[in-house]
Structure formats: C-alpha cells, structure tokens
Amino acid sequence: MGILIVDDSKDSRDLLKTFLKGAGYKDITTAASAQEAFEALGVNGADHRHKIPFKVILMDGVMPEMNGIEACRVIKADAHLADIPVIMVTAMGEQESLNEAFEAGATDYITKPVKKIELLARVRSVLRLHQEMERRKVREKELIETLKQLSEANRVLTLLSAQDGLTGLANRRHFDENFSAEWRRAMRDRQPLSVVMADIDHFKLYNDHYGHQGGDTCLRQVAAVIGQVARRPGDIAARYGGEEFVLILPDTPLEGGMRIAEEAAAAVRALRLPHEKSSAAPYVTLSMGVACMVPDRSKEMKELIERADRALYAAKRQGRNRVKAAAEE
Image (spheres, rainbow, N blue to C red):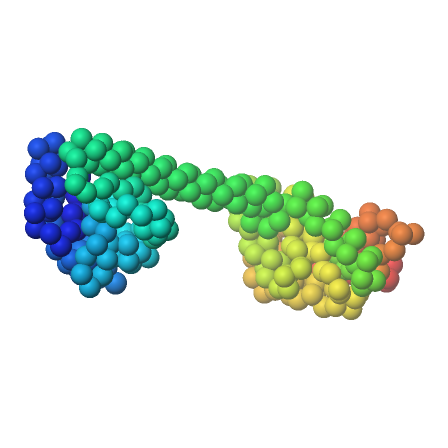
C-alpha cells in the first residue's frame, strides 16, 4: 500500500508518517514540493513502470511554487495516475478552496492540525475505494475479454453456418438468403441478375471409380476454381447440393454471366483432373447453365433458378462439358 505524502513542512511530513507507520503502513514516500511529487510519480511522460505504485496521495493544500490544488490537477490529467485517490491536507477552511480541490480531482480532505483517528479513517476509506476500483477494472477487463471471445465465437459460428463444410463455399442456406436479397435489390434498381448453375460431369461414376475421398478432393478443387471467378463483392459462389454449384451475379447481363461461366469451365478443364469414366472428356469437366432476368413484381425468384437449371440440363443433353444460356433452349 504505497502512500505518498506531499508537504513543504518537514514537521507535517514527519507527523503524518509517524501516524501512518504506527497504524502498520510501511511503504511511505515523502516529497517536499509538487515537483518532487511529480518526480516520484513519473508525471509528464516519464516512465511509470519503475515508479512506486502509490495507492493514495496526501497532498498539502498550500505549498510554494505550486499549490496542492494545482498539483492535484496535474496528477489527475495524467492517464497513468488519474485513478490514485488524493486526500487534501489543508488548513484552509474556505468552502471555495475545498470546491476547487474537488474540481481538481481530490477524493477527500482533512484539516490541519491533523488528528490521528481522522487521518487513519480517511486513508482506510480511500484505500477501500481504490481497491474496489481496481477490482472493478479487473472485472471490466475480464468482461471485455469475454465479450471479445464471444464476439469471435459468434463470428466463427456465423461463418460456419453460412459455409459449406467440405468446399468452403457458401452453403445452400446462405445462397437462399442472399439470392432473395439480391432479387429484391435488382427489382428495386431495375438491374439484371444472372444465375449460373454448374454440375460436375458424371460425378457419380467418378466417386465409384476413385472413391469418396477422391470425390471429396475433386469437389474441393472444383469449388476453389468456381470461387475464384466470383470476384466482385456482390458475387456469391455456393455449393447447391452434391456435385452441383451455383453462382449469383448481381448487375450482370446474360452475356456477362456466360463469360464468367465459360471462364469457370475453362479453369476446371485446365486442372486436368483425370476422369477415366467420363464420356465427355478424359478429365473432370463442368456442364453449366446460365439465365438472366431483370426482376419485377410479375416474376418469381424460382423462375430464374428454373431457367438456369433447364439450361444446365440442356448442356448435359447436348454432350456435357459445355455452357448453355437459357435463351438458347
């Protein structure tokens, strides 16, 4: 319990020190001026780490060069010291001076001549207050840390709830929520909304031949390519189910949707993942369908998905490993 006594009178310092030591307070430092107190406290940018961690300051109200009220104001302005209780020790009885002291940040006061019982009672009171403040700080810090951990856990849970566990793309639920939002936005802004449906050709045969672990690896590699073509912040690549993927492309006309689909299809072909059981190619390929609408109240969201899905199956009927637009049906 470090206590700092600041008083220009040696007799006053010695008296206060004697009272406090007699009550069991051992860690007592004295200063004969505000400047000496500042040096002991490390005021004005000094390194506080090596300073005595004072729990209370007994500050004389009247001192040469700088009085106790102004010294208190300087101490309270230092963020490292602002929470240390300051008890003003003064012979001034004027209410105005006491008001100034409290406005400067003083916690309490005692008057000279100092009475031992009053001194010790005031010191015990402010020390309890300081301890409670310190405990509160610890609790607040723990609470803040807990809140940070909860926030991070919620962020991870939100991400996981929106993410397909195998591929890392958006899952079906996230797709449904965002497709609905993008549909409404496109309707409001009267902008085209494109959807690309993609399916890995003969994936069941791939799984049967290469095993489920090989199939999972294939899905992850194809998903990574599809995710890369969804470059804009509003674009969403999702696993629609099984070996089927979907892209939402806001503010994108049919031609733009076709271009992105062709880019994805070419990138998957460039992987050259062997697929011995495919009739479309000796390596893994995609069949893709693209549809576009400018939403309005006469249309339903499912129409856009259905059109992209029909285009996808048209690509399959025509030999797979190709991209078809809904308008070409």
